[in-house]
Length: 187
Length: 89
Image 1 (cartoon, helix red, strand yellow):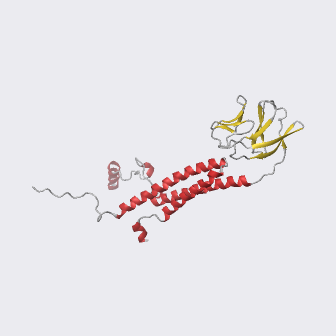
Image 2: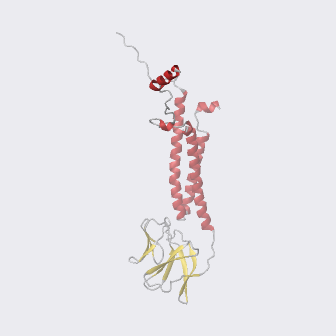
């Protein structure tokens, strides 16, 4: 009995063997070790770079194919009335959608009362253009491009081609959009 | 007093470790692949811009250029290996 008591006292006072040691990774003083599985070999990195190259090639080809396909498809356009165009004051503009809900366009009424309509997407990087009443032109705020409000031709800036033209007709005082034409680089 | 001949501290062609050459080849492969990736990124951004502008005169050469870059990357992965390792396989 005395022996056990003595052993216990000696252990408590001097032995720290049963004190919990910091063995987990988060308990170490500077836990900057890395699992071997997380290390990337040169071979794996080369393979990753090759896969990236493949993805970039597929993306470039895909964008080109999509653009070529969209340009080759001929669309049938139905006449649609542009609401509010009849009451549009000279020297102002009106936004509308034609032929689809996502095909934004802009109708401009010049000071002499005639109407001009164009696609609202800038031909540079598809930012929406707006009508500048002060300069009587369509301006793109993204990269400072500008188009003529009467022809849609590029006045200055980075756009490479004119705005898409929305063909319009005036019937009994109402303005109808009857077609949409993508124009090339003829200016 | 005789001057003792100085011994080279670098590797001679006899005792140079094989891994030294392989490391150089691996670094060259990595460098080339990274440069190809950067070039393809630039080509992709130009292709997107040309596609949005429907400038098909620029699109075709851009896609061909990207394809050539991809072929070079493929050849690096498949064939550009250290000579000793290629013989061993």
